[in-house]
Length: 136
Length: 139
Image 1 (tube, each protein chain N blue to C red):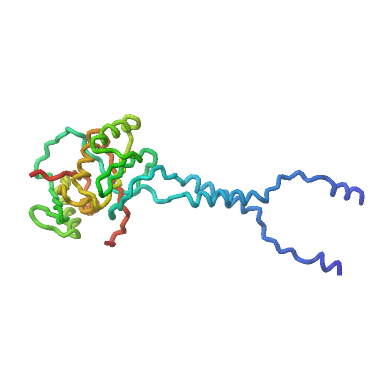
Image 2 (spheres, helix red, strand yellow):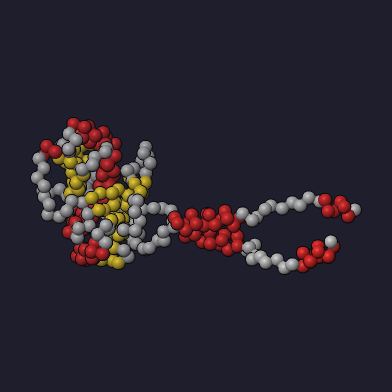
């Protein structure tokens, strides 16, 4: 009985040491933690019209939104506050669902002015938006 | 005396599962990580409330315009005249390309509009104006 016990003790254990596995994996984890930039691509998506494709749209279906060089917004001949723009466009669209919002920004205007106006137009739920530079 | 020593309770935290847990985290980060491919130009993006996440990550061409009107497409500084041929080439390679416009908020709109005209010519019609997200009610 005792002899058998001794034999069992001597039997070599065949084991791969896994004590350091955790450390290795931790190292990799920290590497990925540091290199990961979770800031995904984000922004305002828009599809531009193909070139040369000029579609005649009756002026009834177009709402021009002008942005001048100082960032002031003009809708139907009236200066509009940025905060009111969303509501105004929503009202126009509810009256005419086929309305195309044409955002015409002055060449000298800052890009920021155009984006913040486009932002409000997007928020109003408008699907058809065209970007242009006003022609005089 | 001897008996007492044997009965002493062993205080050990089982660490066998640590590796598994960390592996799980590791795999998560490996899947999520997208290495920053491009250096770009230094731009200050405008903020917008309607900012949305771009779902795709692989078909994006980055185009930077900074406030001194330099244009950079995927880390190559180009002139206005080169925008069309470069973009045309990229569209040939991958017709599903989305152009992410990383434009400084102080840039002149006329210049950006000009670049967009060139993009239209090159048939790069899907654009995304990169913005910082702004929560509703802010600003």
